[in-house]
Structure formats: C-alpha cells, structure tokens
Image (cartoon, rainbow, N blue to C red):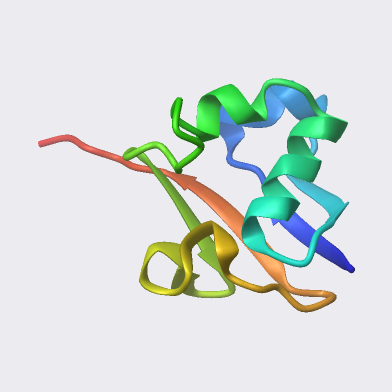
Length: 91
C-alpha cells in the first residue's frame, strides 16, 4: 500500500530536494526500507547496526511517535503519512 514519507530538510539531499516521497509498505519499517531502496543513504542515517531506529531520529505515524506504538512494526494504512523528525537539542 502506498504511504507518504515526509523527509526533513537535512535529508533532502538524498531525494533531490523532495520533501515528500510516496513508497510502498505495510509497516513503518517497510516504508522506511522502501525509502532507502528508492533513495540510497537513508538506512545508514536512520538505523543503527542492530536495525533499530537511531536514538536521535524520531518517526511519527500521523501525530503519534512510533516508539509509543509498535516501533518499526507499526502497521500503516494506505494514504497515511510517516514523518522523519530529527531530534533537536540546544540551550
């Protein structure tokens, strides 16, 4: 099923400047892997060596942080939006 992945400005060099990419996937993890297959370089920025999301990368399905759902196994429905949001720190 087709879902939209919103790409933050910092990663748009991988998508030739596109802020939203349509990919296929039944789960958040599948959608993110499809994003990497279509635009190489995402996997190394999003996932650690064990295949988990990196600490400083937040992923939302609609308005819900997937860490509070089923993580990368969170199911997505056709037409839903997955947003990649890098953590921001400062003071």
